[in-house]
Image (cartoon, rainbow, N blue to C red; front, side):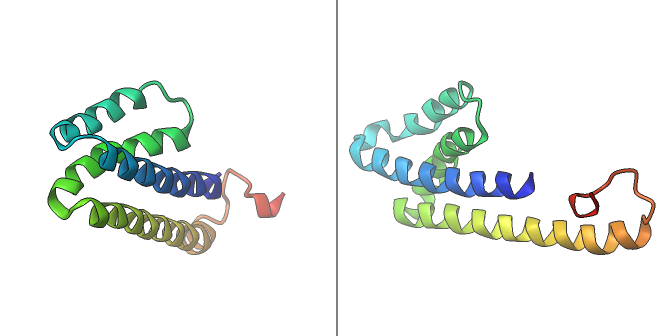
Length: 115
């Protein structure tokens, strides 16, 4: 379900960014380099997409925080995720409406609307 995956991704990125921000403020600066790898190791223990997205933020934000600062890195991560979700939804609907219906009228699958 595309809507469920996008909502889980957005929720995971917001939670992961907030959690990373709190950890970044608590951990001494000399240990910042460990936040990304520890998040990556914990990522392997997760089975749900939302939790994987939360921990995936750690590696990305650890690198971005060193370049943009913690506040800008968190805002950029959330904004980029929103832009990616919007772009993917737009592509999905345009592709489904125009390409699949116009060029492939005899599809082998039945969409939810046709059931």
